[in-house]
Amino acid sequence: MSSKIEHLKDLSTLVSLCKRRGLVFQSSEIYGGLGSCWDYGPLGSQFKLNVKLAWWQAMTRRSDVVGLDAAILMHPTVWKASGHVDTFTDPLVDCKDCKTRFREDHGMKDGKVVCPNCQSENVTEARNFNLMFKTFMGPVEDDGAVVFLRPETAQGIFVNFENVQTSARKKIPFGIAQIGKSFRNEITPGNFIFRTREFEQMEMQYFVKPDTASDHFEQWKETRKNFLLALGLKEEKLKFVEHGENELAHYAKAAFDVEYEFPFGWQELEGIHNRGDFDLKQHQEFSSKKLEYFDEANKEKYVPYVIETAIGCDRLCLALLCDAYREEISELDNGKTDKRVVLGLNPQLSPYKAAILPLSKKPHLQELAHKIEADLITHWEVNYDESGSIGKRYRRQDEVGTPFCITVDFESVDDKKVTIRHRDSMEQERIEIEQLTKYIADAFHQWN
Ligand code: GAP
View (spheres, rainbow, N blue to C red):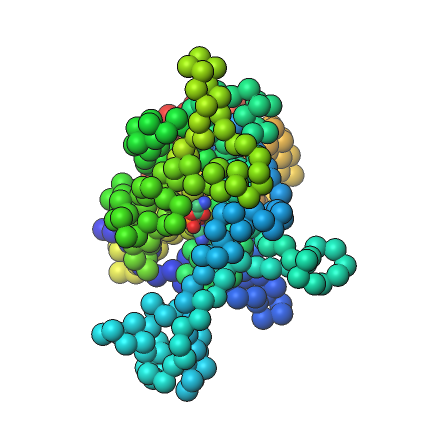
């Protein structure tokens, strides 16, 4: 029997696996769906939570970073101060022939703007389109009631700098980490959960003394790279790209993108920026409140610089799923081929850590299997499955990345042992039921 491994070539393969197995569904599907909005199903919501938890712990299990959960709706002046009202725009062009609306830079061909749909040059002048979603606060829908859905979580951190610094009694350098929803009325969303109009960001702003900013920037580049590798992303699929001076955002002094090679090409996964003192100074000016730090030891007062690390949780989920997907294709002796689909996720992120599979539906096997389930579920998310052949049940677990399958067979009742099957090697071991928890915990510990 010969075998080969195929990696994910086409996003649609992953989209259909995600739907079939309850990872991700199209939003409002029964009404025909809502463009670029996605719902995480039973396994997807657990997976996403595991990703957030991994990020949160990596950020806040250090003495110099604390957490925050700011409101999505903020005072409208925040977005004037941050520059989003004036500059968070994309140039939009309409095709007069086929009515397609597109971003000007997406239609540029040899110095001309050409409709990407019908190739017509009969297009309107570009107009600036603000990407922020607007809504109204209170019952009256007038200009005075306009508020925005935040387009980034970062501003919630900047405006709380003083509150957090004084209440948590933090000395510089220190960081504030936050996970939360952001909204952008993207003109060209797409590629599944890669670019959506509603998404979750995981951002950390690290406040530093201005003359140390470059050193901290370098340290965070390294820290973030190590985090992504520890989650299991393949090193050859990650690229670290420094922005040129003319590519920098209005707030940035230096910027660095972590790019991942998705099936649709290399794309930004995370941004690491030296934002200087731009944001705190802007909020000082617009709020007339001092946002300075007083260094007691050196009797120095200054507006700190900010090193920011910003990653989309949904985008990281997509990178992890693409990276983990593999097909093991074997030529069988009878001339047929067999395909095993595996999500080789880091077990820390797997929705289920183990599956409990009684070999038959005989009550005494069910009873023992449920007892094992009840015991393991106090430690991890596990899945009890008794339907279908054992081979099919193994495959179902492989497809959602469950690292261990525990088979309860007829001998288990007498010898108090079960067979534990490893997702990646498919090796099987017979172990004492009493040892299961320790066995699995040790295996997770040693995984990386
Ligand atoms: N505070 C800085 C900031 O928001 P950004 O580069 O605009 O920077 C940071 O966004 C990260 O958020 C991106 O690297 C990406 O992972 C994620 N992101 C941005 N727009 C997104 C969208 N429309 N859909 C999904 N993720 C998005």
